[in-house]
Length: 504
Image (cartoon, rainbow, N blue to C red; front, top):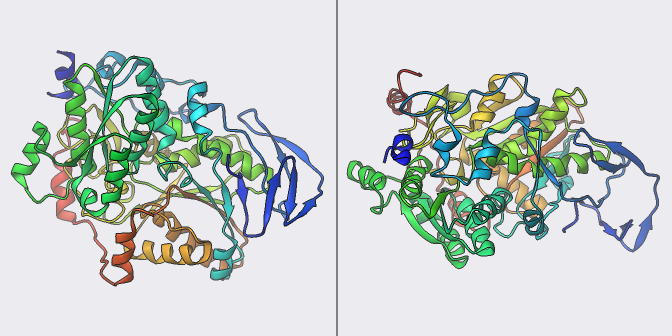
């Protein structure tokens, strides 16, 4: 059957360290209203925002974007298409129908520049959007840097991360098509909890395979998912053929996102009332996340700031794409020229150490082949604490943008990341999730470089979630028990050797 042929079996918008806030249409400092002259700026997305002098940073009310942005529309060189794993021909929409609802399949393949956000999705977004853009003045002071550091904070969502930005529309489109259940994988649990949250709003069943290492490290993420009504399994599990095969080879495996994807895809592909949801990697997921960057563009314009450097962590890439893609649009139009830097863990460095080729998106080889930076679909990263970054490949669209030279990438070990996280927490007050600690560490590096050169750079950082359910990781760091885990060259060579040779 078709399945087997393809798959093988309203908070404030901008905050500063000073006591400035919005009251109605006025800006207030303490109990005194601030007066200032306003002007308007028009962005490439057609929105008007009120702009003010960069010397006075105030909060300003903005609207939730009404459209998602599709970067593909503005690329002169389009990304290579996903391929059918048997015919090696470009995947057709009907090939994806066992897994995804029709509207998401259309969004995956579209070349339209903007996609309207359904009213029902915006109504849910209003629970936490727009999210705040915060200037890290206390961190700047701690580092004694002339750099101005801003972070776009997505941890105010119900699930505590950026993931609901795509979980809500994915579940909505499935509900619209009459689907009863959705299945997925999750690493640290941020995506799984976000999908469970969305399913609880739209009345869908939710089943999640969480990688074993994170399932054991982060029990409260599992409880969040269960609170919102989801069934949660450690991956690999004995429920699926893919899971049983892995366990037979290595009963003590920590699991990986690639393995968990295989398990979820297997269940979706063999049950007519069930579809699969993915929390990163695919283009429609990155599309939904651009609500982050669209908001941030208007927030930065409103305070008269232009970023010189944009930094975000990357695993599959959705958080990074969500912030950076709208800025890349403005860069391509010649309006701004920021450096855009991805930061990945040294234990799973797909951009900096992987190869750019067609590979499976999962370990069992059930998905279409995607051209991406990959460490090999058989690669199982060491169990670092940033469970959401333990994926063997990078989103095909991010990989394509990287190949075109529109962004750069570095990798940082986890102990350096947690050192930065402690500095951030003790100055800014927020405890970050392990994933964005990579962006924090890279931001600190750059801020210290600015201290040496005297450059007053504007650094914009993606802070994709809080770490309230990751405190065992902080405990290990604070007690001196955290070690750096790095990839093994031989391990990667073995994995890369299993990439489909016709396309390697």
